[in-house]
Length: 483
Image (cartoon, rainbow, N blue to C red):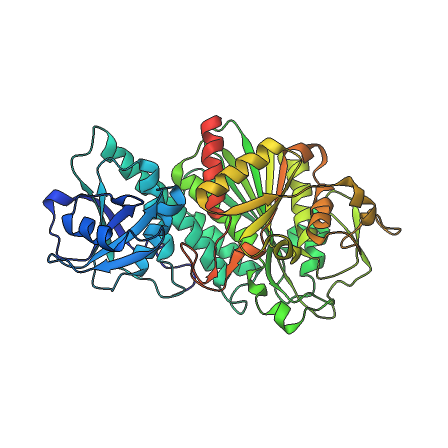
């Protein structure tokens, strides 16, 4: 089984009526701060005697009708519902089905978050699980509630598909993953989706069209670079959004070679490209009324006689030049070509790029938070809000002009990685150079740190997290609603 052949929905999640189904298997009962959310005397007595489990925690309870897992949902925020789903599914024994009992009045956004947690918490690298999960309503739903809840499950399905795809792409080993392989996965995934098309530029077309930085970064590898362009064009769209994701399928650092420790996780250096591609697939699945063009510049940054060198001057798609002072600052180079193409040829309303760009991201904000840069505070606030809904944190950092002089070069229009200055900020300022008249409608997310987790925690799996895919889906939904 290849990394992306498996079906993303490992659990057959069904919305059923608890009054008309057998209850011989393990049940999950959510409990809020004040006790269980469904009527069950034994569970209520247990919570009164031992206390309600904390949000995101699970406790197994003996019950004459079979085992009961009491999961804490705390104050019942979306994050707490999502965490409850993740902890419940990880407690599955494999004897399924698991039955999640909910009050009939559960809000549809809570249902969506719970099911997202069930699917996302159930992710396993190469070892999919196939047990069933029945989500059962206790009591009679109000008019229209069941339809809304079924719609919430389908929304969760689209999110789960996107995040699983991004995780699978990022977890794939570099021995299998190269630019051509990545492009093939995207083409296969997009096949059959309505209003969605994919164009792949190979090295000959990249050279003919002037993508000099992408060619330079990929020039040292035996596997040439690619540029994937995915276009989702629903008829009702009134806004055009361009998403750009860094797609370095493996990063040795090039001539400026990394240390062993610095290199061992560099198969994840395409996590930004994985996130933007996956989010676009979800937008098509949800039929969101917003036009999305997604660009994934793909290259392997390798060491060889044809690798680009520190001190080389390269020409970008937009005609400007960069002196490459550090071949391990390659991500901003390939993004620059894609951003220049987006601004000149695609004429978007909004541009958002995601990149595992700098180690400074983790130094500044830790392992779970991305750095956000934008001159548009409304755009930044919308992305932060979408991240809060998705459980993907980011923090806005400044773009001070004080450091722009560091970018200036005697040989070219700019340096790629000048000495001095905060690394993540300077990298963002470098990218800003390629936005032209769209600089006020651009946001950059440096998400190197949260793209990987050393352990399973909540909805996060060990390994690739798929960070950004869920957030982008939530943001695109809001953009579609706003028109």
